Length: 212
Picture 1: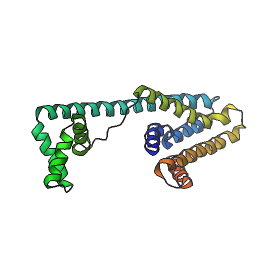
Picture 2: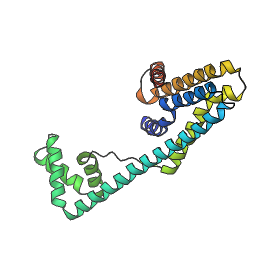
Picture 3: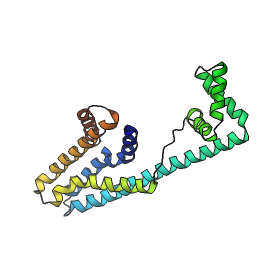
Picture 4: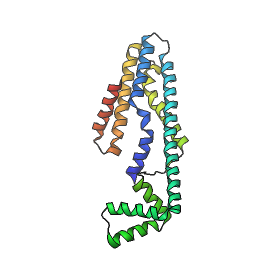
């Protein structure tokens, strides 16, 4: 399913455009310039790299923790299906009864689910524990991708300082570039949310403005 694919991958990279982090970068540029720092871009770049590493590690740990939790719960369910099959069948029956199954239809549904261990465990994971398992890619790769992508996106507001804009125009140009980044990323969210692209873009821009 294309929407599910886009949703999962957009969610993993969503932290790279956190408006509060981009706003923080602008504040570093503003303070460095206001304090007369000779090279405010270097202070901002160091801050950007530190934020990127922090967000990459956070994403890595979040994915790793979710994956470990899912696997642990699956092992528990597999053990219970083997050790207490009748108890687990009763739980399956209760779930189907809540859905309105009864009589032969109920018996048949329970037997169908419990005839295949994997399907049985899958059913219990989702319906009893409310755990939606996902195919977890390499957490390290996702963490690295988040860090690199955030640094690349955050690097754009530094361009006016790198390409020698007039000092009085540098910070204003950085604000414009940051607003553009927020609007573009917000509009891309419409692929998943199905909202109007310009409304999604303005929402992200508004949140970024509040954060700044």
